[in-house]
Length: 541
Ligand SMILES: [Zn+2]
Image: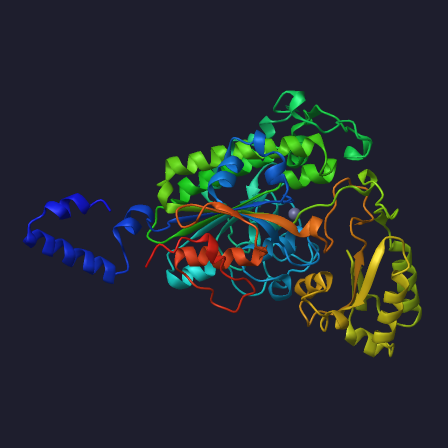
């Protein structure tokens, strides 16, 4: 209590004034301690690390010294947190982060039916076009703007879905990386690129990395992982060093699988903060940054690789520079950070030892069965537009089956019964049964329930055995409803949060309402998440 000594020696008259002043402050809800420790939040910085498993936070902790070290040491760290849905992919995961809602409510259920939109081409060309047209409902920036319409958002990522979905449908400043080396947006958001984006692109930073060599950051003794595992990079270049093509056109495409993509994304974000004066306006602003190199490196080399280890060390350093730079641009007491991931990843089955009972995870291939099933449907007169199988979801359009006079339910049951016999399949559930399942005790059913809107034309959902992965030969795979793919870090950092490790069950849908509480704003629609109040300082009494 800083006023104490003055109060002790003050005259009765002055003491009376002080008491009156403190009384007014108390009425307004402030105390001297609040005023000192909690300046109003002016900038929310939300970081998604694509494919960051929860255990990466501790596994390499003694070698972190940058941003991850800072957030881990000084933040509220949730160690038992999940993307609590099936289809643990990039688009569903990003849509969940700042909406506080699971995919059954956001409508973003798979990557393939996430943001692609040919009606919204990218400015300057490239890609199929992208927009949030499939996204339902609101996100944190909408809630902030409902309180004060002067709040603004900037969202950047290597991936279109990584930039678009944390913002939802808002026409904010949303940019992603075109594979030709530029950051751009789509016509959903704007007709032209602003000057600051054009200037950044004119610097041709990705092109300057052409021919660069990725070597481990630390001496080799710092990496316990073997570096010549045959499955890494599908055997092409399993060991360090990794060289980016000297040809600039090829380099800007391959660039995305190197740690430097994160560095350039962060530099672009910082440029945007300065150009848009984010965090210096009349209302709190939002900066969302999704960093994708961890995902690309994870897919290429697998979660146990020396490359993933090095990628995380480099991410730590990049985030360190990012936080330091933001603190130079804005008052650190007015910034809050949150970090999570869109999904985790599974160990390559080839590297898993059989369990005591002799079970081994496998790569599961249901393509033969799906092909013969579809042939039967065509032979029965069902139009090809009435069925589809994507990832592990069987879509059967009820109208198409009615027109063909084929019983949709019995066809779905036949498929579910057949696919169960494929090696590596744990279960195949009718979606109608999932909607009635015990979602408290059956975690897999709950995650499927959270993954798909009840009105979607989904007939069957297929789950691999724990540790098994779908078809792809990629070392790194995710997408299953098991914990390896669902468990992710959640960290809050900044004056409103109490540092510490929290092992209570938490979900990524809790992140947005918790940030909203710290900002003093409220969701404008029903959400799935709850405020993680243990992590918040009460501050006001
Ligand atoms: Zn992802």
